[in-house]
Amino acid sequence: MAPEGYGGCVTRGDNRRGLSRAYSEETWRVYEFLDISLDPRGLDSLYEFAAPHLGNDSRILDAGCRNAKHLIELIRRYEGTGVGVDPVAIHVSRAHDAVAAADLSARVQVREGLMEELPEDVGRFDFVEQRTRHDGPHARERPEKPD
Ligand SMILES: C[S@@+](CC[C@H](N)C(=O)[O-])C[C@H]1O[C@@H](n2cnc3c(N)ncnc32)[C@H](O)[C@@H]1O
Image (cartoon, rainbow, N blue to C red; front, side, top):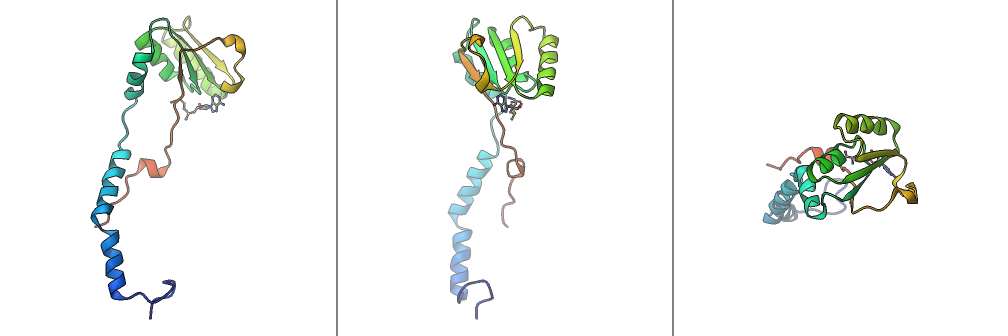
């Protein structure tokens, strides 16, 4: 008789076939893929991605700039000017401080607000930076491989 919850009779043969399937070559290939996807490229890869799109007269929009760290780094590396926008007052305050500390106040403007509500007169941009993060526990921890 199958144990309760198995929904029917499970024979030893079924169980062995199930285990063989669960621990098949395909399973290990999936774990190898997971290891790759859980080992993301570093932050610098996005600066490098931006390189061919930016010149020393480019205008960059950082939509959701938080403390403007990435906008500052892009302007440092590639010159140009930038606008950072974020709706959270403490982020905006820190962004202002960081821009001033980097001596970039003449080239980087930080605005408090929503990107979708930027006024027309903010102008046009050559490059839009919008980083976001998916860092739940599943992304921070590597799954245990079964023995
Ligand atoms: C995941 S954080 C990324 C911050 C920054 N780009 C970074 O990589 O460190 C997302 C940011 O977007 C901002 N944000 C959320 N909705 C926004 C909107 N509609 N317009 C502008 N910024 C927004 C949040 O306040 C937050 O600072």
